View 1 (cartoon, helix red, strand yellow):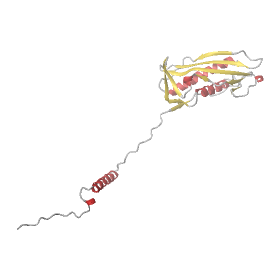
View 2 (cartoon, helix red, strand yellow; view 1 turned 60 degrees about the horizontal axis):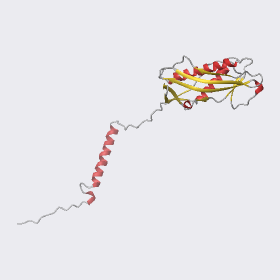
View 3 (spheres, one colour; view 1 turned 135 degrees about the vertical axis):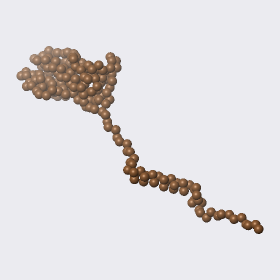
View 4 (spheres, helix red, strand yellow; view 1 turned 45 degrees about the vertical axis):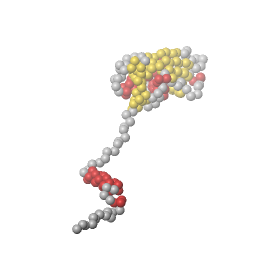
Length: 224
């Protein structure tokens, strides 16, 4: 006796048959959900990147505390805008490695331009030493009858050296207004014997502050 061959008929829709794409996607989703639950249940957390701290530090020149009474005949000093060498006009502090090589410290910057910082220290030092009744800016009104002197400064070097020395050099000129004014005086100042630790720019800022104060001392002597 021969039996008729029978065929199995798949009654499931094509989209739900085993191995169909929707089944594979669903399996992946279930596996991912299970993994997330496992991580959360075990106390694990996904690390979130943290913002990096800006390593830049900022420095300013400083002056000594205290003030002396101005001399009886102390003039009013008009301080012109400080002129600095072009390579010093940026905010990064400068370290000289050789005669022709300098290093700009991008993460050690001046909190104000050197022109403003040096001018501020000179103003405070001249008044503190009693060498000037007051130090005004170049924009102030000129009064020849008031015993006024004009001070011009050009800074030629203001940096640390790789060997720990400090280089500060500036030319200055002092002129007086009025018929009874003092004859013009000028000089070139060069700081001597100042050092920094070669590593921390804060020590360089402190040494350069001393250099500017010494420059003010030389100018104060010329005002007498």
